[in-house]
Image 1 (cartoon, rainbow, N blue to C red):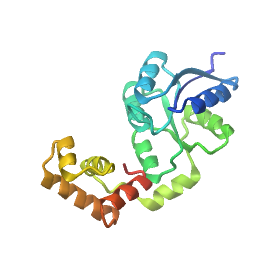
Image 2: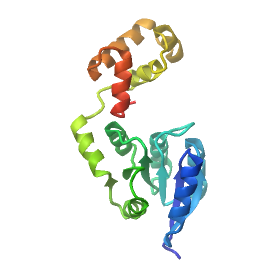
Image 3: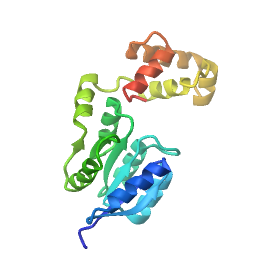
Length: 204
């Protein structure tokens, strides 16, 4: 058929990826032309197969789904991106839309919703999980700057100020300033709380 939808599926959990590929492949108008287990592999597969729709998981090794979405918008603008994730975090939704994604669904929905979303984003619609859309509006935009996000991410594993400074090529006083700003913006009492709040809202 000429109207078969060419689909790229990127998901780092092999069993989940295989199950989704099987279920999506049962649809007469969908062909899974490539599968990928990480972001770099997904980008390479997209360049090779030029899919109509790419289903991307957010948290993947190498390069996350949001980064791949931005890459695809730049390199393959005709490819529609649908983000599917376990993490229904409001900030992720905003970042996905900013990266050019046309849809955002959480993984606990029925496969029929995913199939319908594939067809709808290809038709030019935007498909967003309703509960997540409401939450995103209530949380508001990400208050953290890119550098504040970098410093908080580096602090997440308990690294010292000196460790973070060395890792990000910043002075220790600059790192302290960024941490202080991030703690204030997230309404946290310390950097551990700030990391938790930022992660919960999908700001990191």
